[in-house]
Image (cartoon, rainbow, N blue to C red; front, side, top):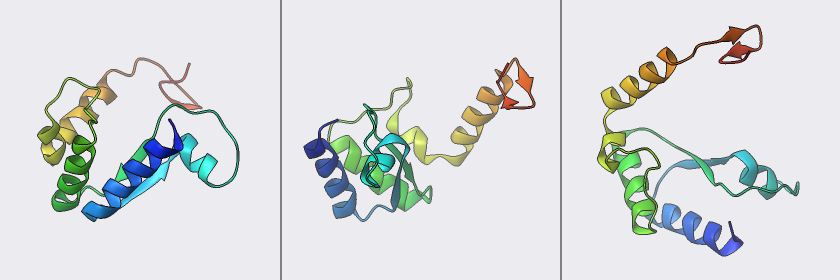
Length: 102
């Protein structure tokens, strides 16, 4: 992801007033530690108004959900809870290292 893509994304989120955090590889790079990454990982505050602003800002830049869901489904806490529960039920192995680890 080019710096200009990051700048464009951060600018759109800032302009929309979205509360968010940058995490993952890009966060590491932004803290001065070179690392290859091709993904931008964001945590967006889940209160409905904030999340709606963030989703609209990202949608305006051409971002789309990877999962086959409608963008507005992210706004519904019950739908998100179902996603978490469904994902948790798919874990088939556990170990002392944590769920899903063999």
